[in-house]
Image (cartoon, rainbow, N blue to C red):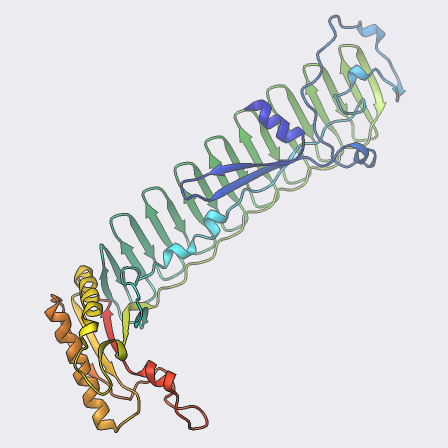
Length: 425
């Protein structure tokens, strides 16, 4: 594990995938800036691989070079660097927070998911502000009328407080949204917390990332610890080396073979098995700041207070008739089965027509059609309290005529309908 992480820190930048129970990916990148020619400009360079083996017999201290020199013994250098150069502290980026930031959709469950639309039958949430309870299939939805909602079934519990806050809980995932930009995502392998002010934490079985929102933060796993103080200073430590950057150009590097101290004023002192030397060295560049955790969106209030099932009249009736067609029996039978399973205590059936024929005829036709559907549902075993109401041509959902006064057959077809409303109580 340590050698893999060392290669990530001191080699090419890479991404570390983390799999969670929600089947979404999290990634954490630990990267160092490019090396080579960039070192001559003072830019950050990749940190070293493990130091080379020490000589079998150290030279005496009296043989160490003295004074300022640019051609010291290469055994005093960190492999891949000039004598006196200190590898940069790796800069870690934030983990992917999409599991938390994209979770707001789970707080507005589809209240119609247990009733399937088929040709001629359309299922939609009913929009109104009445409080109540809607039982759908194996679950129950409670609506408070002020945007708040709770839903529960055998596998999930969802609470929407109506003020932007809420919770989601199932067998593998817990999500808390506090409504003020802060929240928590947690499953069996990952915990993510964002405080809403740029600070947050990420934790899994192998690593921890903490961000304070002011550019500072820490990364820690079983073999590596990185502290970024947000002011240009920081530290890196693993089992074989320690790097300190003081943020003012000075800093130190130490492993089993060499110790480097950069005074921040153009020189560095290097001590190894072959002696000690003072060399010219550029001041250390400051450690870049850590990014901030984004806030999460507040949960939208729930506006639906029930379910509206729309049946085209052509599916149920012949033109001008309120006798249910033989081939409509299967459609009504399927609908009755769903309504029975939903345990809805109350149903309202509304009949509507287009504007063909006179108003009195359309009113009577709409009433008779609504009652015919009620009778058919009862005969199929629906025991809910039912109420049939006819609205005639008074509640069109589309124009019966075009703007030029010509007939609009498509609009009239939409207006000829029967609606079954399942109120949320």
